[in-house]
Image 1 (cartoon, rainbow over the protein chains, first blue to last red):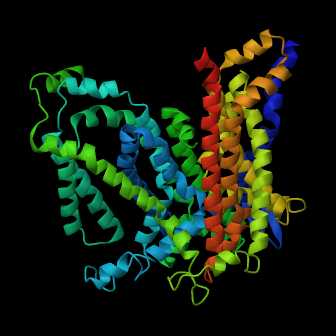
Image 2: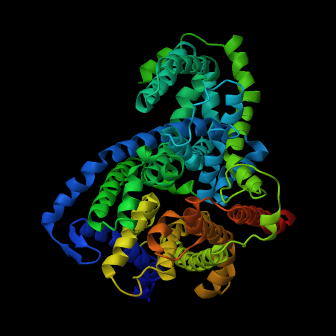
Image 3: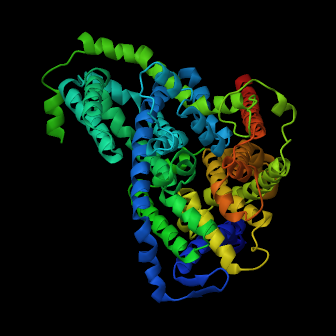
Length: 333
Length: 296
């Protein structure tokens, strides 16, 4: 009887676990094996360790794509963070009775097709579309100004598509913040953030925009000064010491979880780059997709997939070692 | 650490007055809500575009510029060759993969919450990892497996291989959803049932299952919506078989017909209504659950 009871969990797990082992774990091993193949679909493949050269030959021509993937994904992650934080904060702290409705609106985009949503941005960001058309007519933008088919459109698409992934974990973390701690901080004379706020705000705002400008090749001067000014105003007037010292540190696990849930899928994405970008804004995902599905170059494509997966595994392992998996899985639901 | 905190907080009191205080009160009252409103408009903008452009009457196939209002596409939503079969296929795949993944995932969630056993850490990792894997890697690795197998039933790619993939990525989400429901489960109800002479089987079906059913339904809805919208993994595992997202992708090169926007709108409306109904039913059920307690 005792022995039979000990078997129960394994019996319950067996079907699902076998599925995961056969169709998730084993294929990952298979990709690794395939990265040491030589040959072609027609003639068949043979495995040899000497085919490690697949790695350098595969990675060398796509280094620009890898760089773009990192740049676009990191930029989109920072942008989603900036957009999502105040949103999650308002819902968690000031949501009141509307909390569930607001959360529902945040995930509402998931109820439409991902591809159609991305195509919608093609309509919205069009050179004479609803957003830029009127601005150009009014002379606020030069007629040759465009976003569609530039790296900016790709980043905008990724930012939009992964915004809920960032918002929900931050919301979950903020929701758990014990408000008595904030009150205690105020009782201990935590007031406005003043001088530090002005400086930190200016540095963060200016630094972010300067970095973006350098990465995407705009002229950095004016946007940087404007952003530093906006940052300084926000830091000086809108952010309190209690927030900086209590609420924000407590919400950091959500920030990390959200960043991971945005950065990882962004690194593998190829739909945004394909629909919204141009041939010079293709990312690693586009290359992998093309090698597998169009060129049928399995060995090199596998090598690239394995590099992507390896990089992500390292990030995920460091993350789960430090913070565990709870934050990541809770907010998914 | 302690010293600096004291130093900063202790000596000079900082009353929250002046411009900054007024600014902060303004933020509290209006700015945050205004911002949230804008952010939500931003999130919903593409949905509005999809709904609006489902009523468009474009001059050519390219449905990118607003031409004139028309309900033609709504009257004949499947009137494009290949669209009907793609939608049917997506529905079948979503239905079957949801059923299988919900069954497998629920069993796993029960095992993980209810039992302590060797290997549970490894199992947890195996459930968590697929959610942290980029879809492209998951799709590519399945494709590699199927190709290296080289023969039926895995190769050539078909409905069967798409199903394998969809069940795979759905399992983890089901486990996580059902596990969340099980974690806050009132165990004493089960103990009471057992004390009253119910065996484990009866206890499960009469007490446990009805109580975790909302979690199972939520998991199934999630799985269904993930499956019906999946593009990336399907792109790698479908071969020539065309699901609805694959159909959109193929059409995107030549111009997406209005009917696709109609189907997208219908899927959105059905999803919103079903989530609304489940929430309402959940609330009514919760009210009913508490009824005996209130009467006591």
